[in-house]
Length: 244
Image (tube, rainbow, N blue to C red):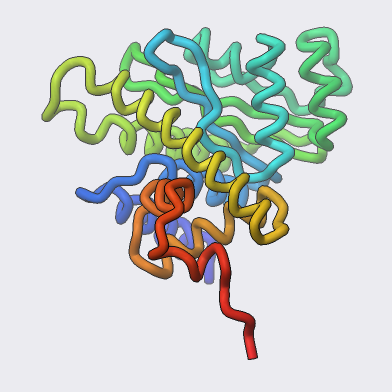
């Protein structure tokens, strides 16, 4: 499959999620994974603002990216925070050559195995709602075409989150963002339960949970809540039958 065909397939896949059954967490996780697949980077993450205008992590394509994003928020230092504050793209092609700009972040990125980072604002006109962050294990810049595609992905994410805004009250944006953050907590709890019951890593637990939801035509959040509530309808997820 050519790159153009793959891009068309991905945009169709993302557009298919923007339907009545819109699951924002599933949408954003898919988006980070496709960024890592198509943008010549090794991982991606998405930060969104909550009702108190504070950034929160909502999706990351790898555990290392998730941990680095969380560290960035905790230390209140890093290119992704600068991107959100200024509303402009922020890039560093080699953090080892510029450690003085974000010293704590640069050290944490090196520990996670990342050398380069590119942060793209998620914005609609003057309102910035978050940042799409791209991480690379090698010192590298994004060429003009790849950067334009990254901005297109950031725009798709913004449109996905704000897609129903025009039909609702002015406070829908903060409600949607808060729902995304609350949903992430539910999914994290479900991942922990599943990891413990089936002796899986957290990444394996999420892949299993997500695969089960897709295979059974159910929302990821719905399956996560059923797992937390001890719903007997998903016993095949918590206690799968051994393969013969």
